Image 1 (cartoon, rainbow, N blue to C red):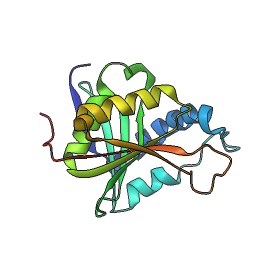
Image 2 (cartoon, rainbow, N blue to C red):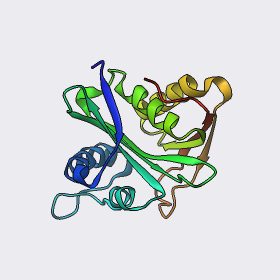
Image 3 (spheres, rainbow, N blue to C red):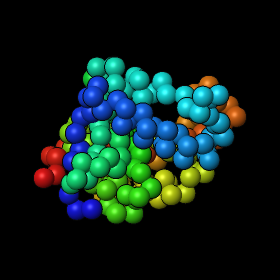
Image 4 (cartoon, rainbow, N blue to C red):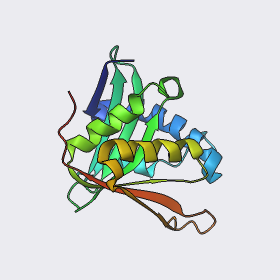
Length: 170
């Protein structure tokens, strides 16, 4: 999977993002204990906000043949620090380098300070984000824990902070 397109999603991409969101939510349910709604969907307020709020940037990641492989939702475009709020790579694209390359391109599109949250109970995500932070920012990134808002039943999220001024990779 050498060629990759990382682009801002449009309203025309909504059906694709909704399907990817279901896969993301299913994967995350292992770590947050959330079950689907009666209709088989999951809570999707972040998806709707990413597509509607001008302070968010929803990205769709596709392969050379235009197959959807991942998505990323950035929030806080006008804030001092951007947050990579949600990131997902489809299972068939994992461990191919798509995730790292997608994050590098998204971050390069919005230079400056960044934060990313993940759960320590998800060892794959923990490894990915620490490796990605090191690749992007070298040894200058930091890590700390914060409680999950309105979810005292969950362990705190792990937050990684870093900064970049890099240009988007070609």
